[in-house]
Image 1: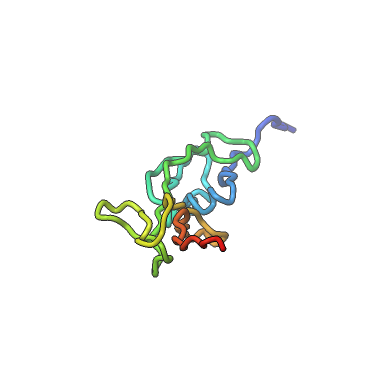
Image 2: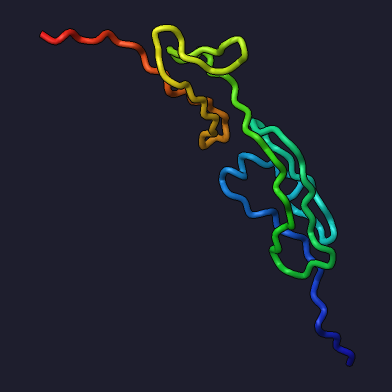
Length: 136
């Protein structure tokens, strides 16, 4: 009887292993089950915007649960202005943040995501002016 040995099955690749932020950032739906020698497209997931990249599963892959070979596309988080704006902040004619009249400081806008992958714009740095107390 003839018995063949040493042959392994050709396998699909596993999706890329990602961090929680990368899960929010990249659209990986088409990369959940890629056949050996196949490819899929990774793009930015809203509220991120940017480019795309191609991920591949090597031809003749025999490694179980081998992650796709991928490069991350450039994705940038896009935040909308809060509505209503918090007291003390406004945009100038050039679109830059500044402190409203009656407030002082250096405004800073930080665009971040929450646990639900929603974009949040946090404004900080403008403090309300307060009158000085006259000593007794």
